[in-house]
Amino acid sequence: MKFLAAFLITVCLLPTAQAAEPAPERLIGHYSNMRIVGADDPHFVSGYDITLYQREAETVAVFAVAIGSEEPAHATIKDLAYDPKKKLLTFTAEYSSGSTPSPVKGEPFREDLNVLIFSGIVRQQSISGKMGIRDFYCDQCKPVFKRVTLKRFIETSTLVKHPIED
Image (cartoon, rainbow, N blue to C red):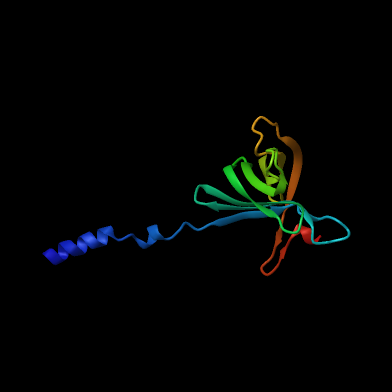
């Protein structure tokens, strides 16, 4: 009887295999407007890049920004919301674009942090919307908005054609 009670307690306390497995992610799409800039050096890119995933009811995104740099800077996404019925995507992201002279006397440089605000529509072949950027350190500053369109990568079984290669 003690063995049966111990066995039942052990079975109840062990996590089930279903609970231990993370929920599978479904790729919504890769979108980008990254372009090579500068005729002298083809390694510098500018633009935005986003990959969207759906995991149960949660939308997850990876976002990168390039402003004439060799490598895009990955942004930390805050407040991401995606309505799959209306196809509306909104998020705020924070990223660094290098260093800048510090406004504090005696400190030569500080990290140049920016806040990016996006609101737009996810379509089959693109994401288009309004994007605003403001200085992270200036809460009262208004973002400068512009219209952007990010095209979907063309995916095949062995090839992913990225818009930067166009």
